Amino acid sequence: MNTAFRIFIVEDDPTYQRMVRYFLELNPDHEVHTFATGQECLDNLNLRPHFVSLDYSLPDMTGEEVLMRIKAFDEHINVVILSGQRDIDIAVDLVARKGAYDYITKEKDFRARLESHIQNIKNKLDLEEEVDQLRQEVVAKYDFTRSVIGGSPAMQRVFRLLEKAVRTNITVSVYGETGTGKEVIAKSIHYNSPRRNAPFVAVNMGAIPKDLLESELFGYEKGAFTGAIARKKGQFELSDGGTLFLDEIAEVDLNLQAKLLRAIQEREVTRVGGEEPIPFDARIIIATHRDLAQEVKEGRFREDLYYRLLGLTIELPPLRERGHDIILLAHFFLKSFLEQNHLPPLKLAKEAKNKLLGYNFPGNVRELKAIMELAAVMASEDEINAEDIQFRSIRKEEAFLTKELTLEEYKKRIIQHFLNKYDQDVLLVADKLDIGKSTIYRMLKEEKEQI
Image (cartoon, rainbow, N blue to C red; front, side):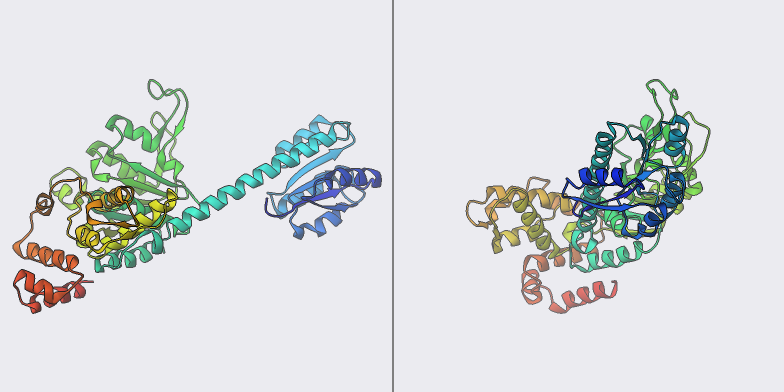
């Protein structure tokens, strides 16, 4: 613990009080306070003790009454009852029903038991402190002003939608090609919302066999099927109070979609093999690389489920449409990799930047991360050169033609490609493509007006 471990000794016998205080103060981390009456203890609860050693027989009130009032003040304060008499019925009542940590009789081994309990409580508090620290680190990691990187117009739209998403519990639909960072967006919403201290549960619907998906989502009762040797909670239950992220939602078959609709609509699930509805409170975020509206038209996705999930829509642009964000992300991934591997800083040569800007990134942000990590390993001096940037995916021409677009849309992509390559130099791009600079300015103005 970073602070002193605060102990109250409530004991009216001066000899016993001094003895307990003496051996507890042998540990310099202990801050010990002594009281002869129950009321003195209660009057000082604002000091927030971590542990109370409470005599059962006090001159002004019973130990049980003091215990109940301590628990009413703060149920997390750990109270051990010390008594001169062994009474099983009283011990059971105080520990099992009234919330005492333990009931110890004043016998020769009471010191060892008291010290053991204190150490266990300190270990528990240390663990809670460590978990809280880790939670804060995760929250900082997914602060979307840090984790979602980009200055392009498309990403500025994403930032504005993220700010709206964290204010409410509205369902969020995240669309984007594979590798664009849909789970990062989902985590950023969760860890910037009031639910940040509750679970974030992610389920890749396409990675779980269809015959196991229902039990994975809703849980199952013991004996529900062969191999169900014990009850298991499903992901909906586990996400209670937090966020449930259903990735690749379009991969769910129509039969399970009906059950999914009911669960989300009623905010309750029934385990496989069970009958009792189990309520849950979770924010739902879904993601897919497919066009769900088109899936509905073609009969592969339920229309009612589509509208139930639609909510706030966030469309993540592919990396090839994010302009100079490619370089911002390249620097981010490079810096992270170097720090994680305790390597010296590396610069990114201009030729290497141009090579990155001229590539189409069919694997999106995920591919860029892999490229930069390899480049950091391949670099021989203090700079990453063009030859250190290695592409191992499909050819750029194939990636460029992966979607059926209009001629005008292809034209815009070509212009944007050359603007990225030549640092947004409109005059140079106009000369390279043999078009008027007004054509480029008009395209940029149209994009700006769409923001």
